[in-house]
Length: 356
Image 1 (cartoon, rainbow, N blue to C red):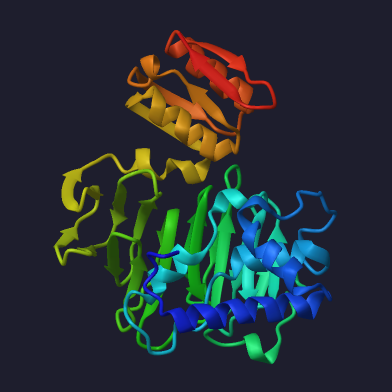
Image 2: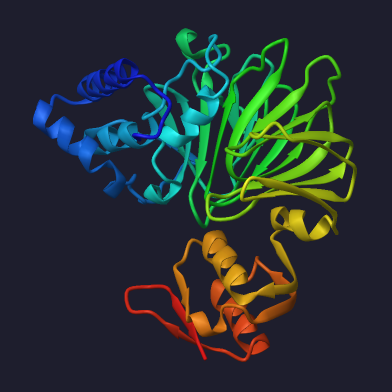
Protein backbone atom coordinates (compact mmCIF):
# COMPACT_ATOMS: atom_id res chain seq x y z
CA UNK A 1 0.00 0.00 0.00
CA UNK A 2 2.91 2.33 0.63
CA UNK A 3 3.40 2.45 -3.13
CA UNK A 4 -0.10 3.63 -3.88
CA UNK A 5 -0.34 7.20 -5.17
CA UNK A 6 -2.87 8.28 -2.63
CA UNK A 7 -2.65 11.04 -0.07
CA UNK A 8 -2.46 10.07 3.56
CA UNK A 9 -5.59 12.08 4.35
CA UNK A 10 -7.53 10.13 1.71
CA UNK A 11 -6.27 6.90 3.19
CA UNK A 12 -7.33 7.95 6.67
CA UNK A 13 -10.78 8.83 5.35
CA UNK A 14 -11.10 5.41 3.74
CA UNK A 15 -10.11 3.77 7.00
CA UNK A 16 -12.78 5.71 8.84
CA UNK A 17 -15.32 4.80 6.19
CA UNK A 18 -14.39 1.13 6.48
CA UNK A 19 -14.89 1.16 10.24
CA UNK A 20 -18.19 3.01 9.85
CA UNK A 21 -19.46 0.50 7.29
CA UNK A 22 -18.60 -2.46 9.47
CA UNK A 23 -20.36 -0.94 12.48
CA UNK A 24 -23.53 -0.50 10.43
CA UNK A 25 -23.76 -4.27 10.09
CA UNK A 26 -22.76 -5.40 13.55
CA UNK A 27 -21.96 -3.73 16.81
CA UNK A 28 -18.35 -4.71 17.41
CA UNK A 29 -15.56 -2.96 19.23
CA UNK A 30 -12.92 -0.80 17.61
CA UNK A 31 -10.34 -3.40 18.51
CA UNK A 32 -12.28 -6.10 16.67
CA UNK A 33 -12.66 -3.88 13.63
CA UNK A 34 -8.95 -3.18 13.57
CA UNK A 35 -8.21 -6.89 13.96
CA UNK A 36 -10.46 -7.73 11.03
CA UNK A 37 -8.61 -5.13 8.94
CA UNK A 38 -5.21 -6.50 9.93
CA UNK A 39 -6.24 -10.05 9.13
CA UNK A 40 -8.19 -9.26 5.97
CA UNK A 41 -5.83 -11.07 3.64
CA UNK A 42 -6.29 -14.23 5.70
CA UNK A 43 -10.04 -14.01 5.62
CA UNK A 44 -12.28 -14.95 2.72
CA UNK A 45 -15.95 -15.28 2.09
CA UNK A 46 -17.59 -18.51 3.18
CA UNK A 47 -17.62 -21.17 0.47
CA UNK A 48 -20.94 -22.60 1.61
CA UNK A 49 -23.18 -23.73 -1.19
CA UNK A 50 -26.52 -22.08 -1.75
CA UNK A 51 -29.67 -22.98 -3.60
CA UNK A 52 -29.94 -19.66 -5.39
CA UNK A 53 -27.72 -18.19 -8.06
CA UNK A 54 -26.80 -15.25 -5.94
CA UNK A 55 -26.59 -14.70 -2.22
CA UNK A 56 -26.28 -11.42 -0.39
CA UNK A 57 -23.50 -11.12 2.17
CA UNK A 58 -25.23 -9.58 5.11
CA UNK A 59 -24.23 -10.63 8.59
CA UNK A 60 -21.48 -11.15 11.09
CA UNK A 61 -17.75 -10.77 10.76
CA UNK A 62 -17.92 -12.25 7.26
CA UNK A 63 -19.35 -8.88 6.24
CA UNK A 64 -16.47 -7.10 7.93
CA UNK A 65 -14.02 -9.33 6.10
CA UNK A 66 -15.74 -8.80 2.76
CA UNK A 67 -15.80 -5.04 3.15
CA UNK A 68 -12.13 -5.05 4.07
CA UNK A 69 -11.26 -7.24 1.09
CA UNK A 70 -13.37 -5.46 -1.47
CA UNK A 71 -13.50 -1.90 -0.24
CA UNK A 72 -9.93 -0.93 0.19
CA UNK A 73 -11.37 0.86 -2.86
CA UNK A 74 -12.84 4.29 -3.39
CA UNK A 75 -16.10 4.53 -5.28
CA UNK A 76 -15.74 7.85 -7.04
CA UNK A 77 -13.41 7.31 -9.97
CA UNK A 78 -15.71 8.99 -12.43
CA UNK A 79 -15.41 12.31 -10.65
CA UNK A 80 -12.51 14.46 -11.94
CA UNK A 81 -9.30 12.86 -10.71
CA UNK A 82 -5.75 12.14 -11.77
CA UNK A 83 -5.38 9.73 -14.70
CA UNK A 84 -3.69 7.12 -12.51
CA UNK A 85 -6.59 6.82 -10.07
CA UNK A 86 -8.33 4.01 -11.96
CA UNK A 87 -5.25 1.82 -11.69
CA UNK A 88 -4.88 2.78 -8.05
CA UNK A 89 -8.25 1.08 -7.56
CA UNK A 90 -6.72 -2.20 -8.74
CA UNK A 91 -3.68 -1.76 -6.52
CA UNK A 92 -5.73 -1.15 -3.38
CA UNK A 93 -7.86 -4.29 -3.58
CA UNK A 94 -6.77 -7.49 -1.87
CA UNK A 95 -5.54 -10.32 -4.12
CA UNK A 96 -8.21 -12.46 -5.77
CA UNK A 97 -6.57 -15.38 -3.99
CA UNK A 98 -8.30 -14.10 -0.85
CA UNK A 99 -11.69 -15.20 -2.22
CA UNK A 100 -13.31 -18.54 -2.97
CA UNK A 101 -16.34 -17.30 -4.89
CA UNK A 102 -17.09 -14.71 -7.57
CA UNK A 103 -17.95 -11.33 -6.05
CA UNK A 104 -19.97 -8.68 -7.84
CA UNK A 105 -19.52 -5.41 -5.96
CA UNK A 106 -22.34 -2.99 -6.75
CA UNK A 107 -21.82 -0.26 -4.18
CA UNK A 108 -20.01 0.43 -0.93
CA UNK A 109 -22.37 -1.72 1.14
CA UNK A 110 -23.91 -4.00 -1.47
CA UNK A 111 -22.18 -7.03 -2.94
CA UNK A 112 -23.37 -10.32 -4.36
CA UNK A 113 -21.80 -13.77 -4.52
CA UNK A 114 -22.27 -15.47 -7.91
CA UNK A 115 -22.03 -19.08 -8.94
CA UNK A 116 -19.37 -20.18 -11.42
CA UNK A 117 -20.08 -19.35 -15.09
CA UNK A 118 -22.78 -16.85 -14.06
CA UNK A 119 -24.08 -14.60 -16.83
CA UNK A 120 -24.52 -10.98 -15.72
CA UNK A 121 -26.35 -8.38 -17.82
CA UNK A 122 -26.56 -4.60 -17.35
CA UNK A 123 -29.27 -2.68 -19.18
CA UNK A 124 -28.90 0.91 -20.41
CA UNK A 125 -29.96 2.24 -17.00
CA UNK A 126 -27.50 0.09 -15.06
CA UNK A 127 -30.02 -2.42 -13.68
CA UNK A 128 -28.68 -5.95 -13.39
CA UNK A 129 -30.01 -9.42 -14.15
CA UNK A 130 -28.17 -12.68 -13.47
CA UNK A 131 -28.53 -15.82 -15.58
CA UNK A 132 -31.39 -14.19 -17.53
CA UNK A 133 -33.68 -14.30 -14.51
CA UNK A 134 -36.59 -11.91 -14.72
CA UNK A 135 -36.16 -10.73 -11.14
CA UNK A 136 -33.52 -8.03 -11.04
CA UNK A 137 -31.06 -7.31 -8.28
CA UNK A 138 -32.82 -4.50 -6.40
CA UNK A 139 -31.34 -1.08 -7.01
CA UNK A 140 -31.29 1.79 -4.58
CA UNK A 141 -31.48 5.37 -5.94
CA UNK A 142 -28.06 6.15 -4.52
CA UNK A 143 -26.47 3.30 -6.49
CA UNK A 144 -27.94 4.19 -9.89
CA UNK A 145 -25.91 5.92 -12.54
CA UNK A 146 -22.14 5.90 -13.02
CA UNK A 147 -21.11 4.22 -9.77
CA UNK A 148 -18.10 1.94 -9.96
CA UNK A 149 -18.77 -1.81 -10.10
CA UNK A 150 -16.23 -4.58 -9.55
CA UNK A 151 -16.26 -8.19 -10.66
CA UNK A 152 -13.69 -10.24 -8.77
CA UNK A 153 -13.21 -13.78 -10.08
CA UNK A 154 -10.99 -16.18 -8.09
CA UNK A 155 -9.03 -19.13 -9.42
CA UNK A 156 -11.20 -21.94 -10.72
CA UNK A 157 -14.09 -19.60 -11.69
CA UNK A 158 -15.21 -17.65 -14.77
CA UNK A 159 -18.07 -15.34 -15.66
CA UNK A 160 -19.66 -13.55 -18.62
CA UNK A 161 -20.87 -9.94 -18.44
CA UNK A 162 -22.80 -7.78 -20.88
CA UNK A 163 -22.05 -4.13 -20.07
CA UNK A 164 -24.58 -1.30 -20.31
CA UNK A 165 -23.52 -0.39 -23.88
CA UNK A 166 -23.94 -3.97 -25.13
CA UNK A 167 -20.23 -4.88 -24.96
CA UNK A 168 -19.74 -8.56 -24.12
CA UNK A 169 -16.96 -9.43 -21.69
CA UNK A 170 -15.71 -12.90 -20.75
CA UNK A 171 -13.72 -12.80 -17.51
CA UNK A 172 -11.17 -15.54 -16.88
CA UNK A 173 -10.08 -17.02 -13.56
CA UNK A 174 -8.00 -14.96 -11.10
CA UNK A 175 -9.19 -11.66 -12.59
CA UNK A 176 -10.52 -8.34 -11.32
CA UNK A 177 -12.35 -5.88 -13.57
CA UNK A 178 -13.62 -2.40 -12.67
CA UNK A 179 -16.30 -0.69 -14.77
CA UNK A 180 -19.22 1.75 -14.36
CA UNK A 181 -22.79 0.49 -14.16
CA UNK A 182 -23.55 2.97 -16.98
CA UNK A 183 -20.92 4.44 -19.29
CA UNK A 184 -20.61 8.21 -19.72
CA UNK A 185 -21.42 10.01 -22.95
CA UNK A 186 -17.79 10.89 -23.81
CA UNK A 187 -15.94 7.61 -23.21
CA UNK A 188 -16.28 4.00 -22.11
CA UNK A 189 -13.54 2.92 -19.76
CA UNK A 190 -12.73 -0.21 -17.73
CA UNK A 191 -9.66 -1.46 -15.82
CA UNK A 192 -8.41 -5.04 -15.92
CA UNK A 193 -6.10 -7.17 -13.83
CA UNK A 194 -6.14 -10.73 -15.11
CA UNK A 195 -7.66 -11.75 -18.44
CA UNK A 196 -10.74 -10.74 -20.41
CA UNK A 197 -12.07 -11.38 -23.90
CA UNK A 198 -14.07 -8.42 -25.22
CA UNK A 199 -16.56 -7.99 -28.03
CA UNK A 200 -16.89 -4.21 -27.98
CA UNK A 201 -20.17 -2.65 -29.11
CA UNK A 202 -19.49 -0.28 -32.02
CA UNK A 203 -19.86 3.41 -31.19
CA UNK A 204 -17.53 5.74 -33.15
CA UNK A 205 -18.51 8.72 -30.98
CA UNK A 206 -17.53 7.05 -27.71
CA UNK A 207 -14.14 5.28 -27.65
CA UNK A 208 -13.74 2.18 -25.49
CA UNK A 209 -10.60 2.14 -23.34
CA UNK A 210 -9.15 -0.81 -21.40
CA UNK A 211 -6.60 0.14 -18.74
CA UNK A 212 -4.02 -2.22 -17.26
CA UNK A 213 -1.01 -1.51 -15.07
CA UNK A 214 1.25 -1.29 -18.12
CA UNK A 215 -0.88 -0.71 -21.22
CA UNK A 216 -3.97 1.16 -22.36
CA UNK A 217 -6.02 -0.17 -25.27
CA UNK A 218 -8.28 2.20 -27.22
CA UNK A 219 -10.93 0.93 -29.66
CA UNK A 220 -14.14 2.04 -31.35
CA UNK A 221 -15.68 -1.41 -31.88
CA UNK A 222 -13.74 -4.65 -32.17
CA UNK A 223 -12.97 -8.10 -30.70
CA UNK A 224 -9.80 -8.69 -28.71
CA UNK A 225 -8.23 -10.41 -25.72
CA UNK A 226 -6.31 -8.70 -22.90
CA UNK A 227 -4.09 -10.71 -20.55
CA UNK A 228 -2.66 -8.70 -17.65
CA UNK A 229 -1.83 -11.18 -14.91
CA UNK A 230 0.64 -9.93 -12.32
CA UNK A 231 3.06 -12.83 -12.87
CA UNK A 232 3.04 -12.75 -16.71
CA UNK A 233 3.82 -10.35 -19.53
CA UNK A 234 0.88 -8.14 -20.48
CA UNK A 235 -0.51 -8.91 -23.92
CA UNK A 236 -3.24 -7.68 -26.27
CA UNK A 237 -4.40 -9.97 -29.11
CA UNK A 238 -6.67 -8.53 -31.80
CA UNK A 239 -9.28 -10.82 -33.40
CA UNK A 240 -10.88 -8.25 -35.70
CA UNK A 241 -11.20 -4.49 -36.02
CA UNK A 242 -8.40 -2.11 -35.09
CA UNK A 243 -6.96 -0.97 -31.77
CA UNK A 244 -4.41 1.50 -30.51
CA UNK A 245 -2.15 0.32 -27.68
CA UNK A 246 -0.31 2.83 -25.49
CA UNK A 247 2.30 1.97 -22.88
CA UNK A 248 2.96 3.86 -19.67
CA UNK A 249 6.20 5.00 -21.32
CA UNK A 250 4.09 6.83 -23.97
CA UNK A 251 4.98 4.32 -26.69
CA UNK A 252 2.14 3.72 -29.18
CA UNK A 253 1.34 0.84 -31.56
CA UNK A 254 -1.58 0.16 -33.90
CA UNK A 255 -2.82 -3.42 -34.18
CA UNK A 256 -4.44 -5.16 -37.12
CA UNK A 257 -6.31 -8.50 -36.91
CA UNK A 258 -4.16 -11.51 -35.95
CA UNK A 259 -1.53 -9.32 -34.33
CA UNK A 260 -0.40 -9.28 -30.71
CA UNK A 261 1.36 -6.64 -28.65
CA UNK A 262 3.17 -7.81 -25.53
CA UNK A 263 4.89 -5.77 -22.84
CA UNK A 264 7.98 -7.14 -21.12
CA UNK A 265 10.29 -5.09 -18.90
CA UNK A 266 8.65 -1.92 -20.19
CA UNK A 267 9.32 -2.75 -23.87
CA UNK A 268 6.47 -3.29 -26.35
CA UNK A 269 6.71 -5.94 -29.04
CA UNK A 270 4.32 -6.58 -31.95
CA UNK A 271 4.02 -9.89 -33.79
CA UNK A 272 1.64 -11.93 -35.95
CA UNK A 273 -0.10 -14.80 -34.10
CA UNK A 274 -2.79 -17.43 -34.41
CA UNK A 275 -5.48 -15.74 -32.34
CA UNK A 276 -7.31 -19.01 -31.61
CA UNK A 277 -4.56 -20.02 -29.20
CA UNK A 278 -5.14 -16.90 -27.12
CA UNK A 279 -8.94 -16.77 -27.03
CA UNK A 280 -9.99 -20.44 -26.86
CA UNK A 281 -10.00 -20.35 -23.04
CA UNK A 282 -13.47 -18.82 -23.20
CA UNK A 283 -14.63 -22.04 -24.90
CA UNK A 284 -12.91 -24.21 -22.27
CA UNK A 285 -10.05 -25.21 -24.57
CA UNK A 286 -6.28 -24.86 -24.14
CA UNK A 287 -4.17 -25.04 -27.31
CA UNK A 288 -0.49 -25.78 -26.79
CA UNK A 289 2.28 -25.07 -29.27
CA UNK A 290 5.68 -25.86 -27.77
CA UNK A 291 4.57 -24.42 -24.42
CA UNK A 292 6.71 -25.02 -21.36
CA UNK A 293 5.46 -27.41 -18.69
CA UNK A 294 5.73 -24.58 -16.16
CA UNK A 295 3.39 -22.29 -18.13
CA UNK A 296 0.89 -25.09 -18.84
CA UNK A 297 0.72 -26.18 -15.20
CA UNK A 298 0.50 -22.58 -13.93
CA UNK A 299 -2.41 -21.91 -16.30
CA UNK A 300 -4.17 -25.14 -15.28
CA UNK A 301 -3.73 -24.29 -11.61
CA UNK A 302 -5.39 -20.92 -12.20
CA UNK A 303 -8.17 -22.36 -14.37
CA UNK A 304 -9.15 -25.16 -11.99
CA UNK A 305 -8.32 -23.34 -8.77
CA UNK A 306 -6.10 -26.17 -7.52
CA UNK A 307 -2.45 -25.89 -6.35
CA UNK A 308 0.05 -27.52 -8.72
CA UNK A 309 3.76 -27.77 -7.96
CA UNK A 310 6.56 -28.98 -10.24
CA UNK A 311 10.27 -29.63 -9.97
CA UNK A 312 12.55 -27.05 -11.59
CA UNK A 313 14.18 -29.81 -13.64
CA UNK A 314 11.00 -30.29 -15.71
CA UNK A 315 9.86 -26.65 -15.96
CA UNK A 316 11.19 -26.04 -19.48
CA UNK A 317 10.01 -29.23 -21.15
CA UNK A 318 7.80 -28.46 -24.15
CA UNK A 319 4.21 -29.54 -24.77
CA UNK A 320 2.03 -29.34 -27.88
CA UNK A 321 -1.56 -30.38 -28.41
CA UNK A 322 -5.07 -29.60 -27.18
CA UNK A 323 -6.59 -29.88 -23.72
CA UNK A 324 -10.36 -30.03 -23.16
CA UNK A 325 -10.91 -28.04 -19.98
CA UNK A 326 -14.45 -29.41 -19.62
CA UNK A 327 -12.79 -32.62 -18.43
CA UNK A 328 -11.92 -33.10 -14.77
CA UNK A 329 -8.56 -31.89 -13.57
CA UNK A 330 -7.43 -35.49 -12.97
CA UNK A 331 -8.14 -36.37 -16.61
CA UNK A 332 -6.38 -33.27 -17.93
CA UNK A 333 -3.32 -33.71 -15.72
CA UNK A 334 -3.09 -37.35 -16.75
CA UNK A 335 -2.79 -36.21 -20.39
CA UNK A 336 -0.03 -33.78 -19.41
CA UNK A 337 1.75 -36.48 -17.45
CA UNK A 338 1.75 -38.94 -20.35
CA UNK A 339 2.59 -36.35 -23.03
CA UNK A 340 5.61 -35.02 -21.14
CA UNK A 341 6.68 -38.39 -19.68
CA UNK A 342 6.32 -37.16 -16.12
CA UNK A 343 5.16 -38.51 -12.80
CA UNK A 344 2.52 -36.84 -10.67
CA UNK A 345 1.63 -37.27 -7.03
CA UNK A 346 -1.38 -36.00 -5.14
CA UNK A 347 -0.12 -33.67 -2.44
CA UNK A 348 -1.15 -34.13 1.14
CA UNK A 349 -3.84 -31.60 1.95
CA UNK A 350 -4.76 -31.12 -1.72
CA UNK A 351 -3.02 -30.24 -4.96
CA UNK A 352 -0.61 -32.05 -7.26
CA UNK A 353 3.16 -32.39 -7.53
CA UNK A 354 4.84 -33.10 -10.90
CA UNK A 355 8.30 -34.60 -10.98
CA UNK A 356 10.67 -36.69 -13.12
